[in-house]
Length: 326
Image (cartoon, rainbow, N blue to C red; front, side, top):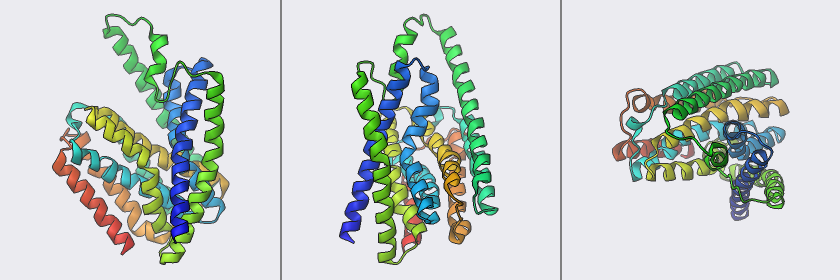
């Protein structure tokens, strides 16, 4: 057991470090090649930060452990709402009344409902995966058009928009104008090598832990793996809350949840059929939908997500985890 826990921790650490390395290398390579920062933000950064979840799900599918593949995604979405928003709200509060994320939130709820429908007619095959990827394409196009329109309005309102191309790199997470070609190559290599190695360690150790303590792969995926892969989102959201950037905090969670459902499972389904565990159909998928709908008053009616609500979110997750593990 101790060895499996050590391997799981090592695998998770490798995934997080390799994912960060891959994002930094890919962002700077794209900007060096002249790809607009907006496109980089909507594609490379989004996919790169989801790389740990993607590799874990693909590895789990290839190992015939659909519980971990599905649990990773569903558990991450539950943790993103109740923990990733709950903990920073408990620390400092998140002024959701100062931002407008209604459009992207509606897309997230729609993505959740579509994913639920796909699961109910499962197992999830490559055909369903194509449907999920098409939905992802719609979300990306909508995000691109919305971001472009927002920038145009901001440019018109600004008194001066000089040096926009030079400042563009600073608007993208992981961009470093001083990064040389050798370092870019090293970041890419480390990311591409570390991700599969970390996924292999974490998935194998998680399966062993599940067998040793007598719980299902699904429960391990919903708890240990899901919370572990949500750590980058938690770090980003805590920093955004401390800086009073509610739009970043909410956007981080909403975007991550959509990518988890549409991109991760969509791509993983191309490597093999993904059976939906019966216990997930009975409970966890509906908890995920409930967590998504729980954000409605904070997004639609602009209710501030204060410390009291943060405590409620945290306690709800603790109760959910307790039901799974007891």
